[in-house]
Image (cartoon, rainbow, N blue to C red):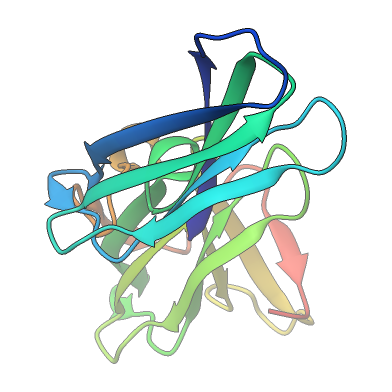
Length: 214
């Protein structure tokens, strides 16, 4: 996910004459973690007190993440307010988060094969996000990974929809288990797997529900 980071720089400009030319220059380097943030749009803007704002300069970072911008205006005001707008991939407030879970499901002593499993992120605001979905293999094994770019830390839940020890009841048993927060990392790839081990789904889990659509 790309997020927009707005850095506001106040530059005191010498001179008090009306419409005197003002200029500014900025240089630096952008990183995403430890890697150069290349080919990234950067801009300089003058935020006017009256009228529309002025774009002073625009460029893209080089392969090493370096940038250099210069610009200026003739203005009535002696204080020039510049905005550096940087489109940043996977950094700062909306930095990517990842999670991974693996394990095995049984029904008694038999593998619980072809069973729907999902990872969900329960959001504090707005609707929840489905991060991943899969079915267990012939041995009951599963592996799920997913992630989002979010200001808030993920609240990840592992859900299982199954018919183990369910008789002839309609729909399926739905089990909702919270993944410990320490297995959510602010990285693009899974850094710390949660090993859920082997679970016998004959067990009655707290707060079980029934689901007809999954």
